[in-house]
Amino acid sequence: MGLLLSNMNRKDWGIWAALTALSFPVGYMSGNVGGKARVPIMWFTVAIGTTAGLTAGILRSGGRLMGLTPNQEEAASYKYRLDFPDYQVRTEPFRTVIDQELQEIQDNPRY
Image (cartoon, rainbow, N blue to C red):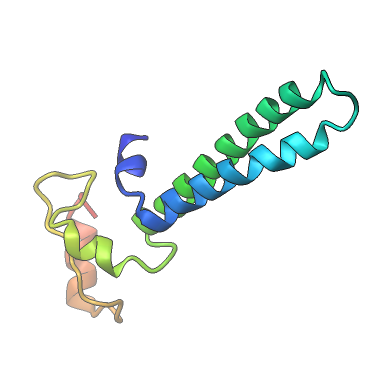
């Protein structure tokens, strides 16, 4: 969880802030049932909006860390793989693996 939060960029934090800020007026306007229910409904909606925003940011961050979305900036900033501290990351783009490299990959348990 700490790695996902530390990998969040400005856009991820912006999504979290926007959903949180948007939930205040949505919750306040939704509380038209009665005057006494307006504020509790607003705070409940803020809690949901904050959770949704943080979840969206963490999902985007995790997608970049796993390589599911474009992550050239993150790959360039991390010198080593995150699960093996002594393993250097290959930063070249994807290409076809030749037989010699395939044998090396199969022989190395770290792949």
